Length: 319
Image (cartoon, rainbow, N blue to C red; front, side):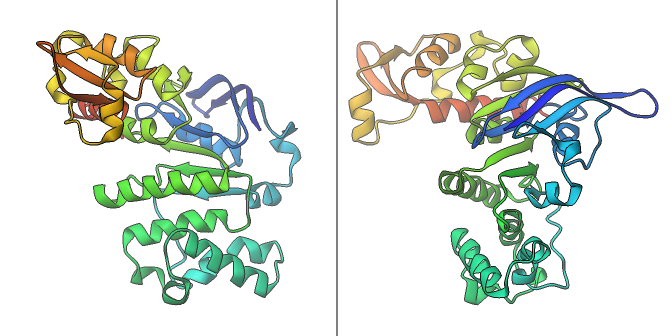
């Protein structure tokens, strides 16, 4: 779908932002680019729609070099969502969503139908929201509009540059959940830049960890956690010192029938973090055994949350 072939970006002072990147992003995949500030993740994203021009190498979309596309048609077929919500303040919500469909000469009834469809898709009642101005919406509601505006002309690819980082934690979590649910329906190819490992682990089909303009590791969330390639990835994810891990940080009560069934696959309360991660790669939920009794469960979700939070608290992730 999207292929980077030895892609390098240099600036006038010979500063290298991206260095000889080779990367293939599959159709319908949700890929998260993550790394410390200045690692090249946003540069990589913006080269896809030619907001930043590459210095060396080739980027292809569906086998065709991006330089061979008409730049307007290229951008019309790639949705783009920013951290700065960037809705046009003088336009209504309907007019904001309709911008690209109008440029593509859609009929007015077709546009109105698409606007209603998209607003319903993200839980914004069309009769209530379509004629409002952006200032009349909350930050979370505005960002929902930003997401559906990127979807308005039904593009194959969506680029998202830290779209939720400016929101409060509750709105951010809700939008992450909404985006995951939405992706189940729309099945777009999404390239998502984040500085938040918890967000990356939650959203990504694969995670691309970057440092100093290069790809350090590319893999599924479970692969990244289970087999970090070096100390940088290990510390970035939050796997730093196995000896300091305490099972109490992730243990949960046996809350439902699923936990009851799955608790037959057990770990010891004294097992290392490394051992637990290996077992969670194969089982969604593990019973925790102590003194011959099951005292609770550890789930894959609780472990991912623990690793991400631990990383944030130690300051391993910078904006």
